[in-house]
Image (cartoon, rainbow, N blue to C red; front, side):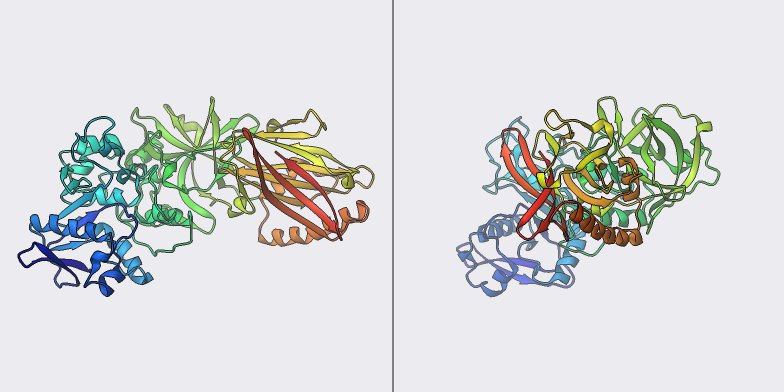
Length: 562
């Protein structure tokens, strides 16, 4: 661990600052702050240490050292210049050690450069309450881990200690006062509760939303920048290895509608919203409640998804059979939580996907039961499949639109093909102009799979367009069909293809190229599925999803047009 060594030089109150690697590690102070332009880097301290004042960020380093020396600390740690970030190995070690470094510090200074020292931090509308420091991902663990902490304003004047401001901080962040006043033990707060503290926090790198929670959750794992949301899934997989806390399953997707399907684990801390009322139960209490004679608390990730032993209740929603899977969590009013599962067609019994289901005017992936009828519940070993990454392949974001209207339009050169079926029926209606199906969705819609089936009037050759809206992303694909197919059977076949079937389907796409190419005069060979983002028009965003058949300079296409 590198530290900055601070000492006064001469009678002019100058400070000499140098990098050291002392052994053993002496008492030290540590800084929590937001990065700004021209921070002092490790390279600056090494190469320009004789005149580091050339960098404006040196004022922050000097301010930290002066404050620490006043409190009796002559070593300080600062993340901008004590880590060689050009070394991936050192950066990974630092991120995995960060929580313990803050925890072992004698004093932590939270420097809030956007806060004034001449106001009451508790006042509504104060700059303290509005500080961006409370919105950053990394500052969550930096706020909780240290034994002692004081907040400093932009002029380095003390605002107050963490203990004195604990109630105000709880109002701002949602982190309970007892987490701010007492050292946190792993069993003091549930996984879901700790995750909820990170809701809405921002990081410069997407992966840091997961990495900044590692210490708080007592997890160590490799750092892989570039993996995106996989980092948060990987964090939860590591948690499953060391914890039997089933509140990790008590998350709710921020958007969704009937038909949306997901993996067993959340993809963002924001899925652990505070609107979920969930507290872990002891597994003995859970086992006794459901009379689980062979119940097991352990669960693990496999190549089939999450393997877990849960009580299942079969229920009917509209025309769909789904299951309530009860988890070892209860609400503040003693209701038992369950997640919604749908069986995977074509898989053996016991293979499910997690889904969202309508409850009144809302859609949720978590439900609450006041009473359970044990005769209707069967404890079962099940697999909850991971989220299909192909759902977001070739996808375009629709989260910034108010309403999307998808209209099918066949071009002149594709004459002879008509739609004959579409699925699901409740999300489509017939358009006023062409009489073809129109699908209207919003950014809150989740459509696992939808399909439109086209058939030629005379040759009976057919193909289908498959599309979906998943987590605010629109995607599409094409598939070949036979004359006995329906839009529903197409969706089922597409959903349950395995890798071998996937290869066959790509070969069948060649069949689509040839058959449609021969049916539509003068066109052959090329079938391309694309999504291109179009233009804004008042409240609607226009996007074309097109399949084009090219021959020379000619192009024929049909379009789903917003």
